Every structure is written in structure tokens, then in C-alpha cells.
Length: 473
Image (cartoon, rainbow, N blue to C red; front, side):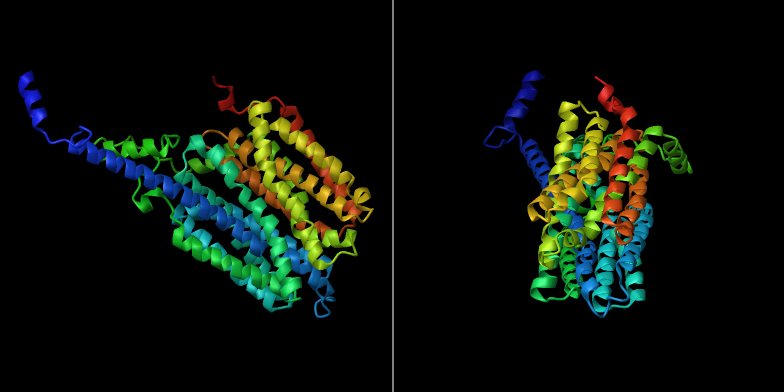
């Protein structure tokens, strides 16, 4: 029998490498599948990164336009600094509300519909603001803009999680999350150039931002897909999304052969609300939420009022220059998340609180010294101070809102924890848009210093706390 089997094997045709055709074809199919998975994964990375960065070209238009609005005779008596601060608060309130909504909609309808709808709404609202000087139009457009802008983050994170496994999301999302810092870095000088160098009109900031986001929307519609299934690839298993895409592809072979993977038990009705209540009782999640609420106003004050702040401290600077100086804040913001992630993993062995507290300490000092440091009216000093603020605020921001939020949430409630913490931050961001229109520089920056100090004090008792996963051998 053994000889007969050997004779039959010898009679089978083989490829030049000595493998049976079935084996060769299977290897070719598997290799092609892996190559397709890799291509789509990085295509989704690129298009979603571009999409969220693109939102900032409309989001920052109002910040850039403020310089011209405050000098425009047609708007000077109506759109005052106080009114502009209220409009920022309206926008940020709508943004906070939207953050709690769009994640659920993305789960139901898919990220594509929600994100594309948000981009379209943001473009239309920006066009309306560029075309009108009426306060009611501005107010309504800011509500639409806030809801539209909030349609970006949660759905795009969901989109990324569909293509990248748990084991790699920390590294991948760390780089991916530079999109919001990059958008805040590049958009203001780009919009300021169009508004004050090319057209000499603040309205051009809104139109240039709208045109840029419209192009990004077209790219998004062409290249984005919701999940691997939409491009003929196997989904990452819900029970072990930590598997690499290659492992997921191999498990699909068993499924086609009749070996179907075990299905996850359906979540009981009401379990989501139970998880929500449990998360609300988690002391660490509440601490991170409070700290993020205290931190976020500083970041948004620079984002939304940076050119105005620079113009006041450097009155001899042109409008274009005032939009360029805050670029230092954005450059530091791109570097900060990568730097603090490395420090947390290597120097502090996955402890998230120590680097966060240190960043908050730096932020406290720089905010407290902002007014005396910039009293010399030196552009170089202003750039250095804004860079230091950007490095500290973005480092603490990335650690609290992303890494620590996921680490300290329960295994099944990491998303809920992150949503609550980011929601608290969004409410705090309202103050960042509102207060600069009402408070003097001394009161404003000393207030930010006090808030950063309090955030650090709240986190300090958790200095040695580690995520559960970091405690396992």
C-alpha cells in the first residue's frame, strides 16, 4: 500500500519547484490575499489620516478670519471680540454634543456615510460664513460646523480599527493621531496666505478652507472603504482582533472549508447602559475626565485665538505673520504624541501618569510666565513660548485622551471610557473658545496655569498605577 501511494504521488504533475499544483495555487492565492490586505490597510490609514487633517482647513478658517473681521468696518460694531468668543462657544457646544452621537451612527450606518456627511456639512457652513456678515448666519453656521466637525474623530477611529488588529493599534494609532496636530499646524498659514496675501479679505479664509476640504471629500469617497469585507478580505475576528491580518486571512480558509469560527455571544439588551454606568463609577476614568476638562481650554484657546493673541503681543506684526507664528505650536504638537508615547513605554515602563504629570508641570510654568516672557515683543521668544506650550499641551492631551483612556478602561469598555474622557474634554474646550474674548491676557494665562496645575495634582496620586495588561508577565 505504501508503494502504491508513493507511485500515485510520483505520477502527480508538479511545478518546477516540485510542489503539487493545488499547493502552488493555494500559496499564490494566500500571497495575493496578504498583499491585498496590506495595500488596503495602508490605503485606509492614508485616506483617513488625510480626512481628519482636512477637517482642520475648515475648522481653522474662523480663527484666521478673526483678524480681518475685527478690522472690517462692516463687522466692527457687530462681530466684536465678545461676540466672536460666544460664537466659538456655540461651535464647541455643538461639537461636544456631536461627539456623543456620531459614534453610534457610525456603528449603525458605517463610517463612510457619517464622515462624508460631516465633510459636506462643514464645507457648506464655511461657505455660508464667507458669504455673509450677518450674526444670525454666523450663529447658525457655527452650530452646523460644530456638529459636522465632530463627525470625524470617532467614525474614523472605528474605520481604522476595522483594518488594524489590537496588537498593532497602539503603534499605528500613535502615528495616525498626528493628523489633528498636522491640520492645526498647516491650515492657519495656508488660509492666512489666501486671505491676506492673495485676496486681502478675511472671507477668502472660509472659501479656501471649503475648497480644500471639498477636494479631500472627493479623495475620501474614491479611496475609503468601511471594512475589509467591502474589498473582499476577511474581517478581523471579533474574539481575537489581535491576530495579524495574515492570521485572519488564514482563518478564513478554515471557514470556507466548513470550520466556522466560534461566534461571540450577543450582548444582552441594556448591557451598553450597564457598561456605561460601570465606567462612570471607575475612579481612574473620572480622574482622567476631570484632568482633560482642565487641560483642553488651553489647547483650544491657542488653536482658535492664536493669531489674535500673537497680534496683541506683537502689534507691529502683519496679519500674515500673526497667522504664521502659531505654526510653532502645531509643529511641537506633531512631535509631542510620539515623544510622550516613547517616554511612557521605555522610561516609565507603561506607566501613563508620570509623563503626563511632568508635561502638565511644564505647561503650568510656561502659562504662568507667558505674559512676562512675551512682554519684550520679540517674535523669536513668542515662537519659543508657543512651541513649549504646544509640546506640553499636546503631550498631555494625547496621553490622557487616547493611550491612558484605553489602557484604564475595562477590556470591554475601553471605547466607553475614551468617549467619556473625550466628552469631558470637549466641554472644557468650550471655555477655550469663550474666555479669550472676555478676559485679559494676564487673567487668561494665569487661569490656564492654575487649571494645568490642578490637573497634575489630580493625577499625582496615581503616579505608580499601571494598566492591567502591563502588570501581567
